[in-house]
Image 1 (cartoon, rainbow, N blue to C red):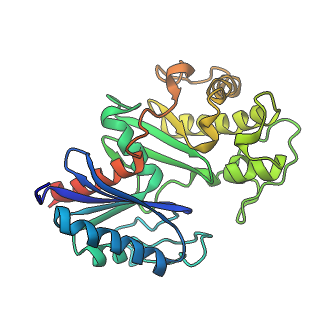
Image 2: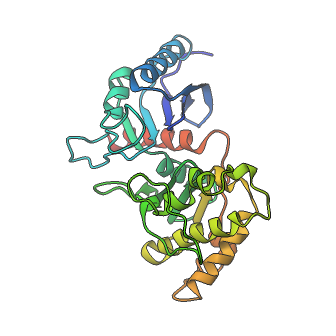
Length: 302
């Protein structure tokens, strides 16, 4: 393939793995690799090696986008903009991820959360096509929520941390939660690791009729209720490893209707079947697609 300057670097940085891709402007992946997330020094060295190798075949990218695990400082007026903050991931707290990637690639670089980028990706051709204001929730190792309005993610002085809100407990639930900061916040009660701590089995190993799924549906539905009454989205898209049990969607909708009791629902939230849905994008990873959109946006802003 001939070298082209219409290529972009897209990085999806997760707590356990990092996807790096070189992508064409139309979203085609020209080259991709998966890197285990270790300490910053070792991980960044692997990222550097990947992009250096691709430059020989495809040329140098014109911009880069990063979809990252968090929390991240996204306040553009902050001296810590682009840094990871209070992440429990060893070695990464206060790490300047944006600065490191931008220096490495020597191109304009943008950063957002992985869930915000997945939300962006679902807009043009996914589960949020044609919508202006919607939420994307992921329930896996953690719980995160991205909010998109008018094609842009909600940031302000920081990104939403809905995974750390407190929720109405399921009836009879006395589990203490596992969040190292808050104990029984949403993530502490309903993330994948919380399910394993509660039931001594991973979500993927729990039987379809296990009582875990009703409790899990309650907590995810409770998050949806909070999003509905506080943000008024047109749709809530839910993905992540825990939602690979597809029967969970219907359980969530039932609990959503029970928790709202029909109060102050609108034309979107009134129909739970079309309001709470699964993602449509899978390959390429929505995080990479969203990271590509960040890179495109740099050029539009210039």
